[in-house]
Amino acid sequence: MEFLGIGPLELLLIIILALVVFSPKDIAGGGKAVGRWINRLYRSDTYRSMKQVSQELQDLPNRLAREAHLEELKDLQKEVKSAGEALRLDAPSKPPIPAIEKPIDDSAADIQPDSKPAEPLGPNTADRK
Image (cartoon, rainbow, N blue to C red):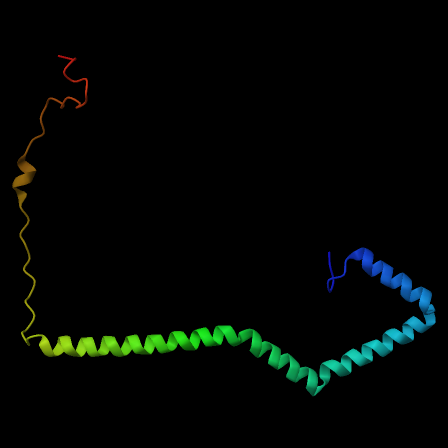
């Protein structure tokens, strides 16, 4: 288990050093002061702008890839439109041919299967006779 890149033994060492350097009474006041400082940092405009710039830098590769892909798609769409218009101009204007339904052939139902099963084919079929 790691917290901010610090393992449990390292965290214990930091706590022991803090108790040795500062008395337990001073640690409570120091923790309160550090909490106030962190709260002011999070609420500051500087921190917000740094966070926004960081997020934009993280999203930059995805955004650039998306924009490049959109340009390729727009070019492809133009090519498809021009090809479709060319096909539309070349195609004769005839009405569509209606589909012709094919009648069902019932003559195949009258065929009877052989009463004798077929012999299996294989390399040793000549030896069986």
